[in-house]
Length: 350
Image 1: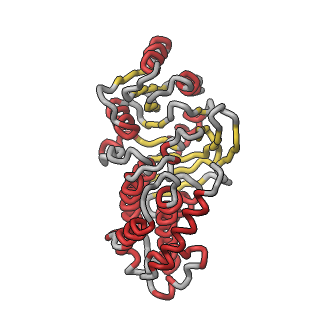
Image 2: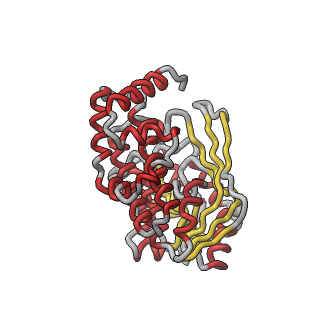
Image 3: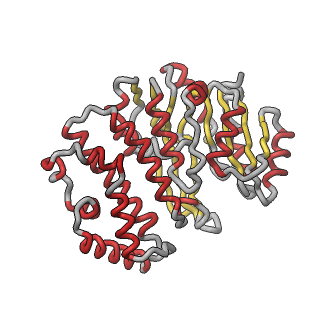
């Protein structure tokens, strides 16, 4: 049995696929399997996958009969994986050479179900020119068990450790026993966070490695997260429902309640910035206000809001103005905020 299975969903990745898989093949730990899941690519990705398989007997190739999206491709890969742990790599990203060895070693030493590690984000334009780089600001290694993990949830989220799946390795048995697969409805973002929240709940031991091992490229105009899609908001709400289950298990101290409110506010702000204010959003101001009214009535958001005292709500500062407006009846002011945000985004250079 291989120690780690690396799952690579492939869709029209001919330009970078060989390099991405090459970074996995060059890992210092060699007892691995690499599962390439070709999701009905229309370029030469299928042929490249088969060629790579011929070069390395650790590589398996799955050619899907229909396009399933990244969630379906990952799920198919996990269903056929044989490793003790699984890791994920996008078809245009890059593993540093000791990613698997170092983090598998930590997993074994700490008996962790999940090891999360640092990553570097690199924004590039259409010519692959680097625009900016950002590395996870982690300072020290840490570990949590089933009793202490809730106390460190907000820390892990604030460091970006629960927003993506490619900056971690995960015990495969726990995924299969707990049926923690990706939600295949979520084809437009938030699928990584949704998986991470559910896996976080199931994990008995979690380790954090502060070193950066994964290079994630955000390429100009190609990222799903940068495009407008009306289903994105529904995906965000599904992920927030999974996060609400984490909130349910927390000790509701005043500080925790206030932090939960801020997290809900961030969700709403993400809806504003990523979708409501998106330059390609065809909704009118009236429709946007109507949508926010729907958000206001959302059952699992209001469940937590009802538990917060007026004193704690008063702690929400001016920077959370849209949140305060959304959960009051000040719709005229809210419409003004929407209009202003729309104007600013329409006049912003991409």
